[in-house]
Length: 198
Length: 175
View 1: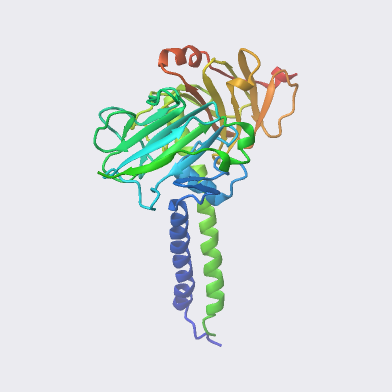
View 2: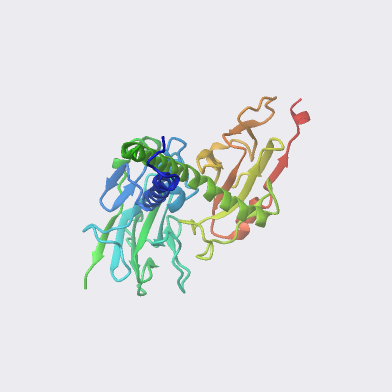
């Protein structure tokens, strides 16, 4: 009995399965990898994922972290908080000026660094990309544990980090935070970001 | 005989998910392999130290930390365990080890080292031998060791970075 399906039709039928599954597999993987890492914690503008760098991270988180911030350390050594949007939900953008106000953390050291949308440092004439616990200028002489950092495209006085004119994000690194705070990061007094209007 | 669309849908879905999953699993491996290749080229080979340049925007590593100096060791345990030895500075210092899938499976900082020197042997998971130094077992044969130093000037850092040593050990070393 001769089959009503020619060999060509069979090849096209199953070949289309291979083509479509390849496209779906590639596109879905790309979308997942380039999606913002889903946080396990949010506070104000800050997000944090407790499993970054951890051997317990699922494959999807591991792939996203490899794309956005490879070679991060486990939480015991460093905690990372990321800000990509302001308090109103808008992307942080160099067309605006922002001020980050905070206090030293109960930790060994901290730093605040600015990156562009591709997660690379933003070239600037001043060669300034971050401030940290050791080099931030303390303007409040009565409370030397306070700090204030400005993010803007145009030069500002004080602890100013150039942002370029496009979207940017801020990474707060806190090293060796007090041990009991590791399981209670909601108690960490995170800095507040204000968008300055003129 | 007619087309079995239900079978087509099931097969296509399974193939899609399989490809998706393989990409997801291999992306970190590929990223780590790419980084290792760059480091190996600069360090002159596996199990050799690369003293990192000052971090600038030209260093194309996502979210690289501009506040630190660093050293890198692309390790390869296929020929045997490696002994890592470094003096411990009095400023912030940490040593992190990443497997081939980018997992940070080991980290130690200077405050956790009780001696002037940090010495340990990096081995495969199935290693057995006399422990004349601390043994750290790697889940993969290859990976990367990253040492971070936070200090104001490179001269203070290099006093310690230049004393970092990596030695390939033989079985006889554990007899």
